[in-house]
Image 1 (cartoon, rainbow, N blue to C red):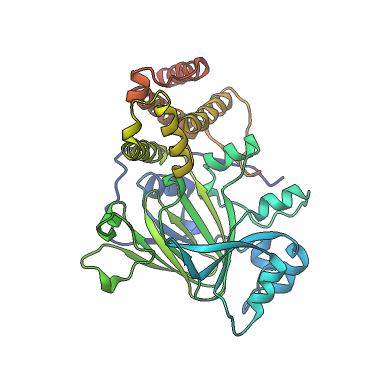
Image 2: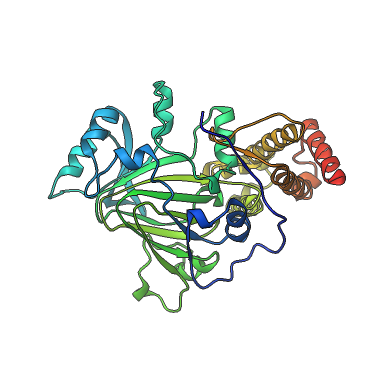
Length: 392
């Protein structure tokens, strides 16, 4: 197990607002965890952090200074399958995807002349290695991104994680989108160079057509006064993409990156608001069935299929984290990503935020009107959190 590092934060005050007109570029030695937490995650502000992965095995093994180490991938991961998108084939405004063996993708990547424009995406390599009992640990989550409720929950519940490898040929791209659940994301370039275009929350509405659809790609010459930021991500750089920031990505060279989606106390309120908004949209779509006895349940089913979670799974997530944080305050040690533990200030900040979310849930009309209810266990958790807050 890696050496355990304790992470804590200073007092957090102020609104979650973004008011910068530039994206900060930072260096690992000069950036503390507490500063990143308060200045970037809490304010929902993007940034680039340089030189975060020089000690990773992936950084050393997966590429040389000039090219991707195709033979390493073939020898070590060749029989694994991964999802691959064809950037030249679209179906209903999305790239067509299929599964491909990694060794076949690497043989494609070697070609000087490529018939297709293929991008290996959303590859759960870490989970695949775990399934075959491989001891390989090819990267370490940077401390700045250690507060990650999504992957903490997934690990504890043995569910699919939100940890991915991306490998793209030169000129491959990712369509304009915002991340799943309105989560944060981070991406570290192991090799190559990417161009990111990012839009502050709400700016995407100025890109919608008459049917409220977003373009698959933003082209500045087609739009008027739009606020956006263009970032070139070099080898070794991490980029932090905050909640609700729509973005698109172009691989300027053959490129490898490791990416996570994550949620924590700094953006759980944004996720909760996005969940409520999506439910409202679902209710409007099937309003004609409002008098059906199964209407509310159907709304939750559709919400989960569209947003990725419903009210039940959201409550299960926050309750699980709340229960763990309470145990941590009682002296039970939990380590995240085999590397980090949280200090008491950090834990109490998590609990204070979770208490506010529980209150907001109870004030939602579905709970006020008793259509949905918090379980006795959830109510007991909320009571325990209130005692912690009272005694702090």
